[in-house]
Length: 260
Image (cartoon, rainbow, N blue to C red; front, top):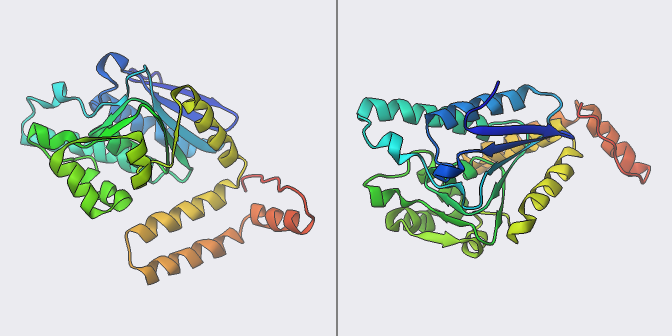
């Protein structure tokens, strides 16, 4: 499939998805969300892909938010349909069984920040700026911001960001735990690819078990989370990679995982 709003490439087990509307600060419209769903569905079902990177084209923005030009004249029924499109794409990224990395430069505002939060890991440049400015448009976040942001940075800080609509810089995002790492702008993709290569060297099925246990635990009580962890850990013993990993440890060598 040829995408109108995305660039997609794949090499050495790493898929790179690039939001490609630089003239609009990579604003997220219906086409973008539909294409994001399609490409991440493709990534999920491609056995040759081990990890995915999501980034934006141009120098100014990862994604400056959902496309207000498209949304401005929508009625309630139309916005509900748009929200369903956003939810479908967001859930597809969040529930991907493979690890995902958001490589963020420039603005990650509103829907852009919400999209980045769907990824497992976030690396940003020193010039990145984050925020949920929907309140300034007479709205609240509608693509996961009221839920995912509070889980990442805590309820009080999430309320501050959402209620005030102010931006935070990369250093503050790192301090809050919104991002994992801050790097110079020129090193952003190099760092993201470095992490992706390291992840691609691990066992895909075992990474999927770790991700499933963590994601499930976020949304449940401690005991249920521990039960899920035990179940996922036991399932690792059904893989060839678990046997290779322990054998390599006992033989004092690096493991060579086969993704099985």
